[in-house]
Image 1 (cartoon, rainbow over the protein chains, first blue to last red):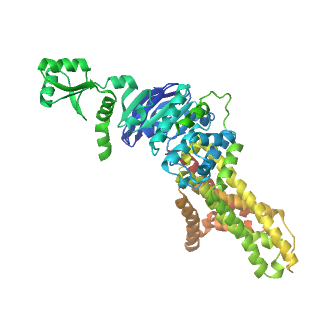
Image 2 (cartoon, rainbow over the protein chains, first blue to last red):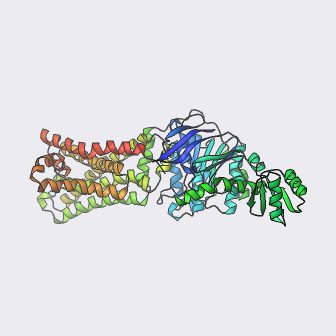
Length: 298
Length: 265
């Protein structure tokens, strides 16, 4: 269980995170989505007590992170896979964490095995690791204390497709057994397959959050006609707002309403379907497009 | 990969841990001691300290006058290179967490940062004390060899020498750690540590009006009596205390506040 209440972080006058509130329930995977620089990492660091918030508070399992007696046993954290001492071996990095938490040394071998780092890889220095291997090591570190909560910042970065598939399975399983997962990404597709809930952030503010299926359903319909201009006029006449999608017009209405509007205007349709995940992508793009351009010129 | 997911499933099942206690300071100190030796850089720093000590004794065995090949004469000079290198150990112990970005893991596991700092200071102080034992051992070997090869090989020893040596090395390593805490960046801290007190010493020599305060604040001068086997006088203790207050306690205090407040990313 993660509870975030009105978290705000200002650097000078610029708010990096602005009044962010959400909750991650046990048994669910929450996808934390937003373009780079939207405030995902800052929010996660504030949850983990690594950055002091300007205002608001966050708790993990009902307590502020800093008050957890041994945080690693309650919440597994992977905020940056590159944040490892280049001169230590993978095994040594985990051993230090295991010592700190007072865990049996066997846990180190078990978790290395779990994330697919074999004995040869474990003996190599992290300097020689690929980003994918560092992600696996970071995930092993997060899982080391058998926590009930996982907070992972862009864990799929650098993983190959097989690795991403494997990680989805692991996180899904973790949540299905009652665990809480907060997982960030700047790629919608990455979290779409595994998340139950989505929290979308842009420019430091939450722009949408809720059940993934609800947000998907809210994606509207995708409609295409050979005479695009006539279709647009028909939709306008019916009072339906339409935006240009990747392969047609995206309408914030269900397929039936759109079909009726087209029939009323006598426009022949080439395609009409619920926008589905394409709609969510569109939603994600529109919700964050303005924010990301602002980010780019800042 | 899919085949490994199935057996792995049980291993990641979240469970409620009963009565999880926070790691003791003893445990954290052991972790920090391990961090000092588990990288090539740290290990070689310690090995270098040992080698330089041994080299100095060897040089003395070859070149020093026969009468000067005593336990005391071996022990005293062996302290100097160690007192130069130990601060580097103190600095790296603190700053490598930031330069290597392991602070992210360290402080995620132990969010009470002052406990980590305490454990780090414990670890480097223990290392400094161990270095005194190493100096004793090297000096003893030197004395044995000297008596076998015609040197004086006298075993005369004074307890105040041991006390002085311990204070010297502990103060050296803590000054380094204090600069590390204050500046949080390895090259900056090492340069700062080497440069600032020396700059002060040079100023103290050059500027007449600074000569008085310099006697109280120049650690090169206030720590010099520690190399001798004589017990320090009240005045010498006073000067040592004042100089350490400025170059050790003050940066430690400011650095601790800085580390506690710093954003870890």
